[in-house]
Length: 532
Ligand code: GLN
Image 1: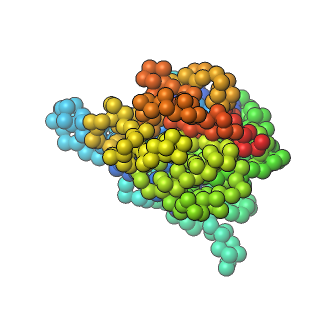
Image 2 (image 1 turned 120 degrees about the vertical axis):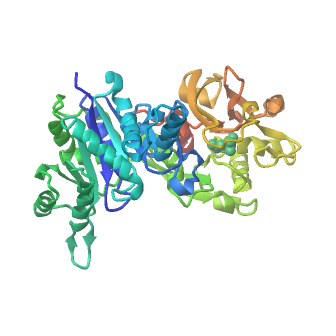
Image 3 (image 1 turned 90 degrees about the vertical axis):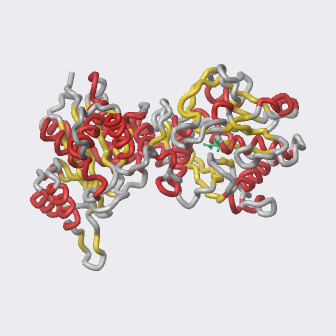
C-alpha cells in the first residue's frame, strides 16, 4: 500500500487558467491507474463558504452529500472522478480563521499569542492532512485558489512550503502558468511564467512541474527555456493547450506525460497505463452526435454561465449518453413576459427552469412554465423551477389567483409554497438551509420512476421553502401529482403532470449528482423526452 502523497496545484500569472480542470484531469489519470484519489480546494477568501455569495461573484454554489456549500470546482472533481466529496474538500480562509478563533476562545493555545504563523498555517496543514488520515487515499490533490502573489494566499503558500519541507518525498507542487502569444511579435512569451515561478520561489516554494496554458503548441526550444529558467526538468514542462471539451484535458495531459512525471517524482508504484476505455468512449460519443436538440435554460444569472455550471454539464453529459448534441438557448427570466414568451421560446425542444432565490425574474419563469405546460413541451424545473411550476399550476389551472411562494409574497392568499417549519426562526443566512442529501420515495407510475428505475433515491437539497401539503389533494385531483416524497417528513420532492408529455419539477438538485461515467437518470430522461 502506498503512503498518502500530497500534490499541490498553484496558479500564476492570471486567474481562470483552468486549475480546477487540470487538477481534476490529473486526478482522473491517477484514478485510472487504480490509485485512490481525492481533490480539495483551498479558497483564500474570507467568506466561510460560497453559500452566501451571489452567483455573479463566484459562479454556482455546489452542494455535497453532507450538505456543505462549496466551490464549483468540486463539481468538476465529482464529475471527473465519479466520487463524492464533502466539507473537508473545500476550505476557505474564513473557515480556517473561524476555527482558530474558536480554539483561542476555548483556551486551546494555552495563553500563547495567536499568529498567522504558526497557528493559521498549522490549521491549513491540518485541513490538508485530514484527507490523508486513515490511509483512505493514496493521493490527495490540493488546489490552491487565487493567484500566487496575492496577499490573501500567502498563508497557503507558506503551508505548502512547510509541508514540502517536512515531507519532501511525499509532496509535489504543480504550478499552472500562462504562456501568452503576442500576435504582433508572432511569438510565445515565457517571461510571465518565469516571473510567476520567481514569485513562488520567493515564498520558498520550488515548483516540481509546470503546466503551461497556451493557445499554440510549445516547441522544444520554448520548453527547454522554461525548464532552464524555472529550475525544473525538461519533462516537467507540460503544455496545456486549449481543448474543445474540458473532458479531453485528461487525455491531453496524458499525452504530455503529466501522470507519468507525477508518479515518478513521488515514487508511487502503480499500473503502467491508465485504464480510460469508458472515458474515451464518452469522448467519442461527444465528438460524434447523431442528433441535435435545443433546450431553453431560463434563469436570472444567464450573463454568467458559471452560475449554472452543474446544470450545463449535466445536460451535456446526458446528451452525450443519448448521442445527442444539446444546444442551450440562454433566456433571461427577467425579459420574459406574457406577450413575448411565445416568440422567445418558440422552436425549443425542451425547457429547463433553473434554481434561484428572490423575486427578480420570477414572473418570467412562471410564464415560461405556462408555455411549456400548455404546449406539451418537455419541462424540467429544479428547486425554484419546481416551486414556480407549482405556482403556475395553482394560478392558471386551480384558479387560485395570486397564489405564490411566501419567499416572495408573505401576504399571498394561497401560499402554495411555504417556509419549512424548521426554517421559521432562523436568522443566520450561512449554512442554515435544508442542505445535502435526503431520501425520496418515488411512485412507480411516474416519469421519475421511468428515469431512476428505483423507488428509493437520495438527492441533494438547498432550499428553505417547500410545497405546502395543505394544497396537495387539490393539486392531485386537478392533474398535478406528487410522485416523490421524503418518507420521514412527507416533504414533496417531485411533482409531475401525468397528462403532459414530460413535465417534472424536483425540489432537489439532480445536477449535483451527475458525472461523466454516471450520467444522471433524470437528465437522461429529460433529454430523451426532448428528442422524441
Ligand atoms: N429560493 C427557494 C428556496 O429557498 C429555492 C432555492 C433553490 O432554487 N435552490 O426554497
